[in-house]
Length: 605
Image (cartoon, rainbow, N blue to C red; front, side, top):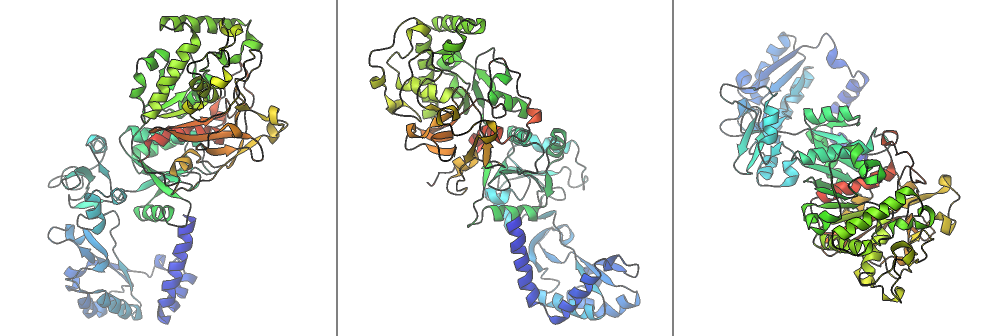
């Protein structure tokens, strides 16, 4: 809105310079006395032009009459150009830039205003801003299916939402126009028409800014998802105040925002139009992205996993975004096709149990994990856990290839690519699974099958935590000496030409606190050339956040375990997100939840 404000000042300045000296003097007088209209001497007279004087010119004949009554301002009703035929007494406006042809012309109005001004009578014109006629230019474009203009009005594909409104909305003309919605045959949508079926109600909007002034960034994503789940669309304003959300106004939405403690502001239709025009204007690195459908979310996670065991389930639980848990049996049974979005728990797809062998091999929880995993693999018909995990990895690869979206954190990204590269070889040390590694395993890796990484070197020592040299951290690079100096930087992308990485990097912070995980960051030199780096520690090999394409689908990898727990240890207390509701690190997780809801646009670079 800041850019619009500057443009508005320029427009006002331009037209002010075109005003006559007489009007400029009047402007100064009113400016010195801004409350002039509240003075007790002011007396107004409201009338319909055609009933009072038939035409605008006819009003001139009644000036003496108005003066004798002590009138200081007149309010002209039903003056703007309205539709032919039924027009609600002239309030079904078709053109806000012209007066009704049967009343006169703009020149007639200007001449009248000049005469009245010299008699110290002010003119006020009634401008109808809550609805317009169905033959107004905006309404015609909306009825023709133009999504930009459909956002000017309340329009719905089904009657489900209108029926909810009707439960509490009063009827203005219950005798001859019952109800508040009309089915529009042209657009094949239900349209809010409170007064008459030829008067389309302008929509108001609710703007939820996502900058530093937002009170709860994470809950805002949940509200956005809820709106989509209810069958409504919204605009994601990319790079505008931290990636703000623009909703159609409703009492239910406002109640929800208040209940969740999310800050917002209501804006009128003209403010909404101005905002969208500004955001989509050439020369600014902003754009509006229409979100249309709530994605079906699957989380690949053990059945007994608790929400706080994984940052993504923790974030979605706090934001109240619904998801379904799936595990190996469901994946191998072809159930991934039920979902648009798949998050992969911090799983080890190599079948090495996170390489916890070195530090925890005698711990009860570790021994139980191994025993349960081996039993489950045999139940599914596999001799080894590593074979089962490779089969799961291939199913996920097919899901992405067919158009799905995969998100992985912590140990999942590099272990997933290792499993794909090692599809036909054994890379698990005998200390972990009882048999040896395939001879020459390193040179037999097939990097053409991986998503993001290539030319990596396996770490086959069971006592070393890393699985390969993809894994990199400040301990390896000496890039920081602790939490206070450990940060990564987000890249800024073109909102109009690179909408995908732009959506994935929406944030109110550009520099974000680093955090450790089983895989903390990714070694830059091991990335495939088509992988997009979205966040990195500048001047190092440490890449934190990446995105890429595979087949018809996409993937996003994020290093580290918990953005608000710098070094998460086994058995630690879960993160309380009510204490981190504005977390920029967690925002990067929730950006990906909304990404599949976006209107599909071809990336231009």
